[in-house]
Length: 326
Image (cartoon, rainbow, N blue to C red; front, side, top):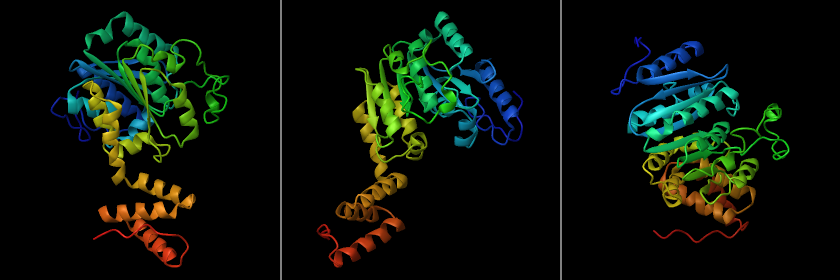
């Protein structure tokens, strides 16, 4: 593929930046890039697939054009970072907007992969997606029995008769979620293990997560992280590490919780936790939190709140925790 000033090849020959291209130019550049190292395939008007053929571990990601261009500084699919870091092979299913990948041509694509024995060529297969793409990662994982699945805030289904309590996606009410590759929790029966990540304080996400209860599923709770978990995991620099562990068949609930200790230094989590404690008038605990945070990092908001709490404690409004020993 011919390079221009906006793109550079990395050491694997995979271009590292497609930024500053128009949507049409970006799509063509991504397809050409894939065909130089594997293949691509159009899947109707709203979907296409790219494949980078490298080592015997395969990462399958489901992503949207809008998400790729918003989240990546280089406008590369999420999985390309793992391709570069690990040398893995990468199959990327891309949609224009949130479609939940409910499309006959996508079904046919996975049917053909199964018929061709595509997944059998790899020693380990890992499926990943977030939100609507998390639904797709769980449901299409059935095409590769024994795969590992990581899904962030996935929906189990949007079939109105089953999830009428979820009013977020009314535009999808007429979409078929009952036919092939339909109910995501059932599609995980053939997986080696699946990890469902969600914030239990996000009620609708938690209700979907409950539907994934299976013996081969770990539901990993991330309270006070909010409704944009994938972004938070990237900012904490643990999402790639989770995928890397999964690709090496080393991801466990214990390993997840070890990595998740990174939240102790993550501003968004700490602010959400403080807001929750204040809302519930847990001033004793809020003071402990502010002390801990200000002892470890520069955090003006927590320092101001600590000063306020110390003043309120002096006025006898609540009993403060004992002072920290020097």
